[in-house]
Length: 82
Image 1: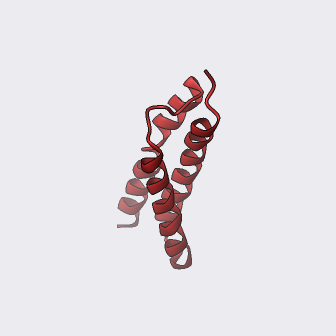
Image 2: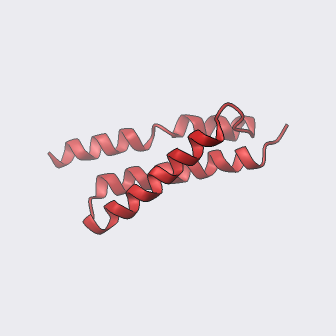
Image 3: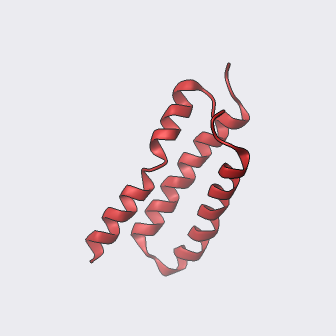
Protein backbone atom coordinates (compact mmCIF):
# COMPACT_ATOMS: atom_id res chain seq x y z
CA UNK A 1 0.00 0.00 0.00
CA UNK A 2 2.93 2.34 0.66
CA UNK A 3 3.99 1.97 -2.97
CA UNK A 4 0.58 3.10 -4.16
CA UNK A 5 0.92 6.20 -1.98
CA UNK A 6 4.34 6.96 -3.45
CA UNK A 7 3.16 6.46 -7.04
CA UNK A 8 0.20 8.77 -6.44
CA UNK A 9 2.37 11.33 -4.66
CA UNK A 10 4.93 11.37 -7.47
CA UNK A 11 2.30 11.64 -10.20
CA UNK A 12 0.49 14.47 -8.43
CA UNK A 13 3.76 16.21 -7.59
CA UNK A 14 4.79 16.41 -11.22
CA UNK A 15 1.43 17.64 -12.53
CA UNK A 16 2.71 21.20 -12.15
CA UNK A 17 6.02 20.49 -13.89
CA UNK A 18 4.81 21.00 -17.50
CA UNK A 19 3.39 24.43 -16.64
CA UNK A 20 6.55 25.41 -14.75
CA UNK A 21 8.63 24.39 -17.79
CA UNK A 22 6.32 26.33 -20.12
CA UNK A 23 6.54 29.41 -17.89
CA UNK A 24 10.33 29.11 -17.84
CA UNK A 25 10.54 28.73 -21.64
CA UNK A 26 8.19 31.61 -22.44
CA UNK A 27 9.36 33.69 -19.47
CA UNK A 28 5.74 34.46 -18.50
CA UNK A 29 2.65 32.89 -16.97
CA UNK A 30 0.06 34.97 -18.76
CA UNK A 31 -2.35 32.08 -19.34
CA UNK A 32 -2.94 31.54 -15.61
CA UNK A 33 -5.14 33.74 -13.47
CA UNK A 34 -4.05 35.22 -10.16
CA UNK A 35 -7.02 33.63 -8.39
CA UNK A 36 -6.02 30.17 -9.63
CA UNK A 37 -2.39 30.59 -8.58
CA UNK A 38 -3.24 32.03 -5.17
CA UNK A 39 -5.80 29.33 -4.37
CA UNK A 40 -3.47 26.57 -5.60
CA UNK A 41 -0.51 27.95 -3.64
CA UNK A 42 -2.43 28.54 -0.43
CA UNK A 43 -4.01 25.09 -0.67
CA UNK A 44 -0.58 23.51 -1.01
CA UNK A 45 0.86 25.54 1.90
CA UNK A 46 -2.01 24.84 4.29
CA UNK A 47 -2.02 21.16 3.44
CA UNK A 48 1.73 20.72 3.87
CA UNK A 49 1.52 22.39 7.29
CA UNK A 50 -1.15 19.82 8.18
CA UNK A 51 0.77 16.86 6.71
CA UNK A 52 4.31 17.52 8.04
CA UNK A 53 3.59 16.52 11.67
CA UNK A 54 2.16 13.22 10.39
CA UNK A 55 5.41 12.45 8.51
CA UNK A 56 3.52 11.05 5.54
CA UNK A 57 6.40 11.20 3.06
CA UNK A 58 4.55 10.64 -0.23
CA UNK A 59 2.31 13.64 0.52
CA UNK A 60 5.18 15.76 1.83
CA UNK A 61 7.03 15.08 -1.43
CA UNK A 62 3.93 15.94 -3.46
CA UNK A 63 3.20 19.25 -1.74
CA UNK A 64 6.86 20.32 -1.60
CA UNK A 65 7.31 19.73 -5.34
CA UNK A 66 4.10 21.63 -6.11
CA UNK A 67 5.18 24.57 -3.96
CA UNK A 68 8.45 24.73 -5.93
CA UNK A 69 6.58 24.63 -9.25
CA UNK A 70 4.11 27.27 -8.07
CA UNK A 71 7.07 29.44 -7.06
CA UNK A 72 8.51 29.21 -10.58
CA UNK A 73 5.14 29.98 -12.17
CA UNK A 74 4.52 32.91 -9.80
CA UNK A 75 7.97 34.32 -10.48
CA UNK A 76 7.12 34.61 -14.17
CA UNK A 77 3.64 35.91 -13.37
CA UNK A 78 5.20 38.77 -11.37
CA UNK A 79 8.24 39.27 -13.66
CA UNK A 80 7.12 38.45 -17.20
CA UNK A 81 9.66 38.88 -19.97
CA UNK A 82 8.17 40.11 -23.24
